[in-house]
Image 1 (cartoon, helix red, strand yellow):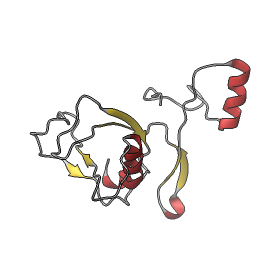
Image 2 (image 1 turned 120 degrees about the horizontal axis):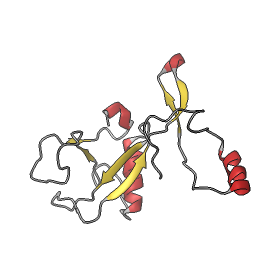
Image 3 (image 1 turned 90 degrees about the vertical axis):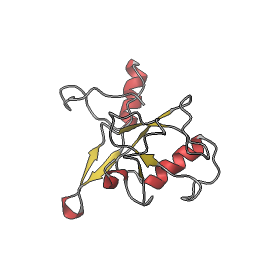
Length: 143
C-alpha cells in the first residue's frame, strides 16, 4: 500500500473519490495504482463521524518461534486501520504465514511503543506489551 506524505490537504493536494470514479478516471487517463483507504468511524455516540483514514498504521511484524525469538531475516510490512480489532490483525497475519489456528492461545501479538528501541532485540524485554484483549480496537490499546 503506497504511503502518503504527511501534511497533505484535501482539495489542494488530492481529491477523495469513490472507487468506481477512480476506475473510470484511470481508464481514461491512466496513472499510478490507487491509494485505497478505509472509511472509519471517529468518536462515539452522536458525536461519531465517518472519515477516510489517510494514514493507517504501518507495522513491521516479525514471526517468532516457540522460544519467542523473532526471525529478523523475514520481516513483514503490513498496513492496518487503527480502528481494526487485534483479532482481525492476528487473523490477517496468521493467514499470510499459513498458520491454521489464530486463536489467542496459539498466536499472540506483542507491541513496543518506543520506536527508539530495537524492537527485534529479544534481550531487551522491557516495554513490550501483549495486545489484549484481542476484541479491542488497536486505537483503544494506544497502538
